[in-house]
Image 1 (cartoon, rainbow, N blue to C red):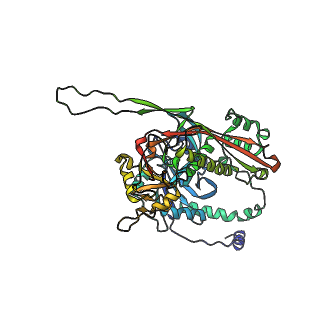
Image 2: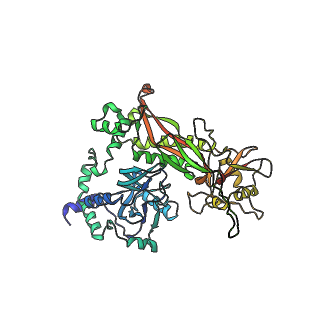
Image 3: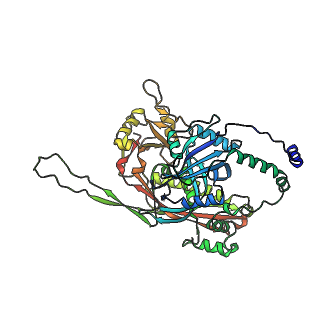
Length: 528
């Protein structure tokens, strides 16, 4: 071994531990083709990944593996990307020496984390009837392991532990399909990478105190994202002409900048985590001020009849439901010092603040809004039937069973419970005659508990379990309630209101509506 390499080893002692090479290997479906729209209303068309996978293979660019779309949490690398008939199949390897990767791996093995989500730039898309987009080409940057995916079909199908695990037959069949493929690193390639790393130790030490080099071009965000970040940090006056042009392509009538599509998708994902109704109801995107959807008011007539006798004739009656979108505004403030600090993750800060505020305000309106300047809530809708508890001021197990079976079987099969924490505390104490609790905790951490086999969601805006209050809500919310969202979310930069405190205020506004569309799919329980 060369002398300089020996010196580096003496100065930087290395410990190499061999483990099963398949430990930490994960496989799954990162995106699907032509399925139901995702939570933001988008559908990916077959072939949308073809160009980006070819570019990745030709350039050698790596698609990043992150936890929760957090750029500060790389957890491994994706080593296979396969464009199959169903969608984008992926295989990756967690870096098991990394703490975040170990945590993710443990959660995956327990079944707590089982979802994937892609980070991309839309290259071409076309509007879908009823809202949303059909994405025909995109540029893939990263694939994250997440708690709540935008696409419910984007899942992890296989996780290998230290023992290597076993691969399912379905996954083996999928691996045999043709498509764009990036092969797993071989042992010789790993040896070459290790030698290269040893040769670079001295250079890395010399550069440790230097200014980090500019990120590679492949890792740079889109021009729209760069323009939005420059606008938020410095204002339009300090932006380059190219950034101003990109920003001007997305401005609203009130002077705010329309956020880029990638940022909007991430913001909606985080809003969903703060809004229980967004997690269970159906969301439709629109470019209009209201969504008009048909509603069947009467059913078809029918009956038994003789062979040559006249058949009953009737036609169903249809009406329309108009769901207007309403403007919702929130604001937050960031200090000038943080905005001037390039290491400060401004995008993550704004996303977290906006998502929390939007989610909490939306949740209240979706549940108990009066429809005046805000969505109509599900709780007080005349289309939602209610029943009373058998005893005054008390909810018992029989009341929940009655509420459950008052709905049709088709609604019960996809139903969910919703109540606030005070009601949850009372329901958790209920027991059967044999002394067993009717409440069932989930066998997997992070998954909803169940009552009568259906999941329970906590909503802070539901009423307390006191006389006269509709404290429990049960139903198939995807059929019962429709959320309507305008595609545009705008951010206005205000450097003046808090100038004396050396802070910049950011106003965010979105337009959203909601209303009951199928009242028979849900039911409330009123405390007598």
